[in-house]
Image 1 (tube, rainbow, N blue to C red):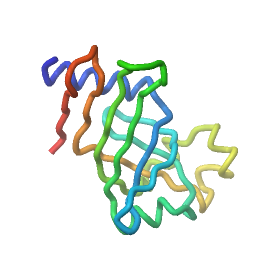
Image 2: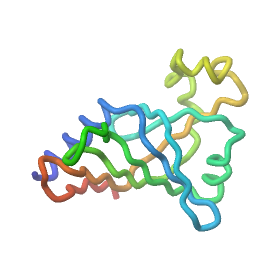
Image 3: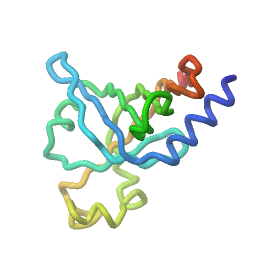
Image 4: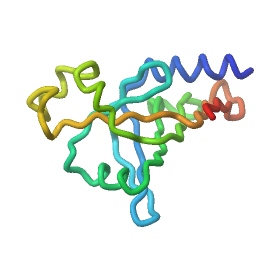
Length: 139
């Protein structure tokens, strides 16, 4: 698989997958949780409450590691390992609002609603047809 094919495979998985794990760092230890992701090309977005441990973690250390795409069907499933930096996506809150967020927030103007933006630094396409991991770099 060449770099172009790896990038295409990564984008296909991003477009087809919504739930993954996101790890943050607190006191030099990783903390992972399931999150719902939306993407614009390779940039990821995820909603959260401002009053969460992950927001505190990100303020101290914006590095994250995300696993996305694994469907649990067994050995050989394709998935992504994403290393990136997290920031708040203030200007995208209205655009990225989904009706399913209403279970947690009153609307895009809810003061507790926060949208996180993840800019990838590197994406590894894992288990693509039994091949070695393919790396997509963004540096």
